[in-house]
Length: 223
Image (tube, rainbow, N blue to C red):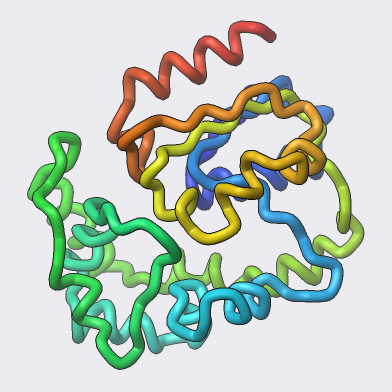
């Protein structure tokens, strides 16, 4: 198969290719680079040490806590709107003492997102809740434990990586340096291209759908 992933899908794609490279012809991943597994420091512990307790992944760890804020303090529609429209760079911080600040300064909707889209997504979260997706973050340390046999393993499939230069992941301290270093190439030895798109944020495939589709097609047609 050819594999394409974005954000959490990119993480799943990296690990699928790590576990079963025999099943993959080529990979195109967007926004989130390969997350190296530190042999002694769990993922959440490492994020907390770097960015503090208000870093979004750390804030998501206590079951029920952030769900209550999303529903009763901020509101589902404001959460969805903030996630899709933010152009704030750097590590995503959700202040525990001032959660409403996350939803106060929100840019206008981009051309690829409508009020109807926002309301649709919000209605689904109102119906089903946020716990399902949040549990992915709560499994980070469990996944760290389960992947111990793959410590130091490389992703050995032909890979193209694409990110926007104002993506909050790319602008998180250390990420840009890793992506453009030999460390990324060492972790993904068949990395063939790294594309940085100017003026593009996190939702790169929605913001630049034609360009991303062309990048994907131009890469996989080689195989």
